[in-house]
Length: 443
Image 1 (cartoon, rainbow, N blue to C red):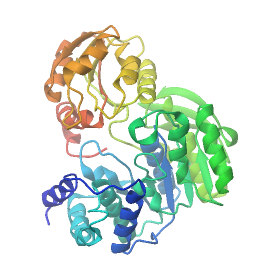
Image 2: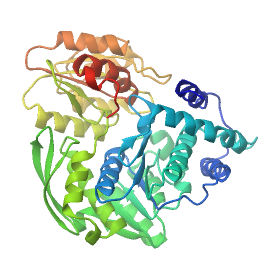
Image 3: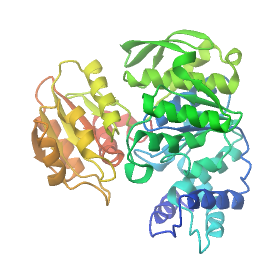
């Protein structure tokens, strides 16, 4: 099987509908796949990372810290931005094309064997996770950091038995699946905790915190609130990244993260507390934390490509993530006008997500991500116009970026955001134009 054959096989898993009798089907189908792969008992301890925003960044930081501390972590994150291989990393390295092809060839027979009339064939996400777990066993990973998909309680990843669970900040998103209240959404996220195991919880709004705390008490999980065991200070931008002062089980002093933005300070603190819960503070030297945070990279998370105009790529797609993006733009590009390339999927609330970024832009170029559920440009443009900026519609994402760069005035910054599918569509082209040497490398 070639690399392109592997990608075609995975794409085929997106086609067609599966029988659906309830949310438990996802867990049952994933359990059936793991049985077919002989992975009912994963080969190493698992850390499950749930939440609404910051899951990918927190997971990546945690895996990088563990690697710097001498472990060999496997990392599974989603979705990918440029290419599927980003989802699976071993010891900080993205798996290669030949490696992915070999993984898919090895797993495909089990995928087909795991299908049945009641549950249907495993989904794209389920097979992606199965590939990662198979890879972690094959490569002798000694810990697996797994980012949960949507929700938590009924997500396929929750079939695993985590040694440590992590819940990043919870906010409104995927309300069609998780409910229209923070309490309902938090109840789904809280489903990843286990009796007698630590659950590391980032700072939450009160409504979500009450639900998570009640779930921990009812299930006998050991609740670790990051805000109660750690102290941190935001040191602002530094050396192309972000600076923070952190004290938790250990005093880690001033640290620098390559992941930019004030929101990454909380993600870093959460990752460190999770590492302490897994290893114990005595096994986590300050230098390992420092090296891990400096090493952690994740495409499309306030990723800045230098040039004129500067280009910011960010996969923010809900109101809370847009607020974080707007705050990061204020820190890294203070008092500089913005031109925003914007496109969203109908699965997210555009009315809530638009104001934080569009309301501060001089010009918004509205486009359409390459996805069946993309919001049509005229419909999204109408929402953006209510926030006040000038709006133009350019449905093709590549043409939209070109229009934004051409329209940008001196000292303005261009920001592409609203959907991972939009950022993914323009990232490779932008890298090739601005950093030719990086255009064939992930991260």
